[in-house]
Length: 301
Image (cartoon, helix red, strand yellow):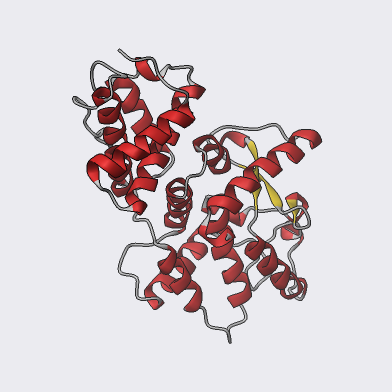
């Protein structure tokens, strides 16, 4: 069995293999190489050598994608890239067997929501009525949900005191009272700033003074209200899929992953693990997570 080349050289050889042996399009070739990079990241975090990868390890990798909210269709496409990668390793003599031969996609107990395309998101934004008073708020809500991957419960509980528009991030208190840092897109920052003067004109209730997004009576919005806003906009945009705030969260994760973002960064932004919120860590983590979004999220480009 041949000794493994460094990851960079191995990926370069894999790319040449795909180009010469299979004649794939440039888009598919790039996607397959990105899939291999995601696998490298997954294995590195768990200290698993590539040559020790077995079927169970690959099942864990697929389950991680599921936990991130990656759509079944995207999971299947990523699995195609992983199969091609291990076929390359076996044919080139780096591995004696192919762990994908017995691999089946895990059977998930629940169906994930549909994932919207970037065009779908843009169509929903275009469907906003510029004459309605709530449109600046609703536009900011859509961009914050899709641009930062928040849960709807986290969105309605967003605090002014935990929002730093100058630095471009919010502190989220998620499930289990865990704190995490989430970057805001430049567009979300602009839209929130446009909404704030409108918010200041409301007669804000005493228990909602620190809440960012308010209803017209100056109180905290309900999750159901946000659901209806998203559902109705999708209908206005002519989107047939069943769309909810959670659809935007899954779209956020799927588009980031397909764009090549780091799995670990996506996990942190979705709130699957708590992070420290000390000043120095916030500074370092904000820079790293923001760079992932700027490079890989469609609305950050």
